[in-house]
Image 1 (cartoon, rainbow, N blue to C red):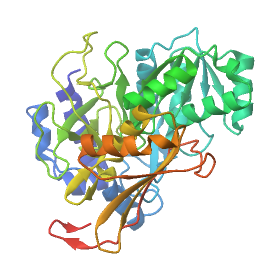
Image 2: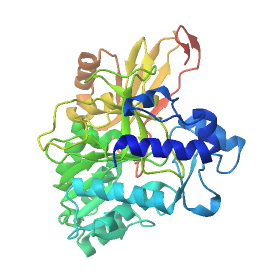
Image 3: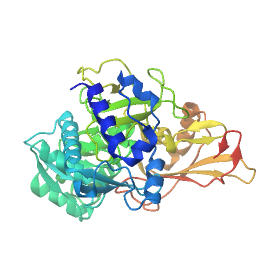
Image 4: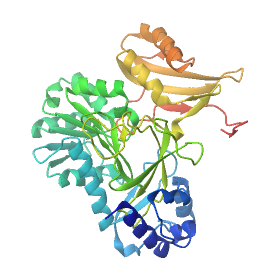
Length: 416
């Protein structure tokens, strides 16, 4: 069935039965082309949150009665309040098939034993990853409820060949292995499949993880409210948009017009196989740059050579410049052996915006060189403050290494 037919079928269903979508989309009128989707309004996470606050606990973005829903997940709250997401069995099968597709793209198959370093909680990543592992016929090894040493021991006992985690935790676990004489536990792992942070899309971070594990590191992407939308490109690196199952648009982050090829845009997705909790033109907040050039393997989905380098809500304005913390992280990691770090945006007594990076550096004397490189590459003055190992907290899940301490104030661009 064509994408246009599936899209029109979805819109016809949700405008008839889903109160949230009917109020936003109005009466159904068949689209003549997939591009006509641009006539419809965007959906933002805040829209879904506002709806759930007005109609607790699940809101009105439900196409069926509650008896049809068997899966409850919630967002991690990284960008604010927690959003509750319900899936029918059919929708969950779509999610599971998407994760299996992503894992196959990373080379995971029936002969693998896959260790999942996610907590057994309400967040979608463990459940979807577990379902995806089962979907490719591999053995799933849950590591929830264990500390890092126990996880290393389990990986060694079962000779896991694949490790799923955030890139921050993959890096952290390698350090724990080194500190505890357990590096042999990593020896059977051939692939790491990471998600949850831009880290695996940053060349320096990926190279650091691959060197520590002596294994390939892949990225993939998705969101509880939108579905799995980015799968790894083993041959060319980066990600591909999962356009077999989602309509994907790249939009000006500050507006609503498409961006030109090669420009950084916000990813907007419409899942074609998820009717129970539909996301129509959902603004993911992820920033990507796509090219019409085919990847070396000739995959179908548009290629994102740089993966997902950052998010719209990560971008900050410092002295009139747009700054992404991920760009600072990339330069930090390629400059020296790096432990934990923390980026702080603050205002000095003279009302000037400043940036400070506290970092565990293997060679504290590298701080001046890093400052120079940051200024040359980003045109930004950044103060590097070396700190002793252990002072900054280690991150084992989604890393939060950025603090913006500047007072909110009105500028010519509005409220910041």
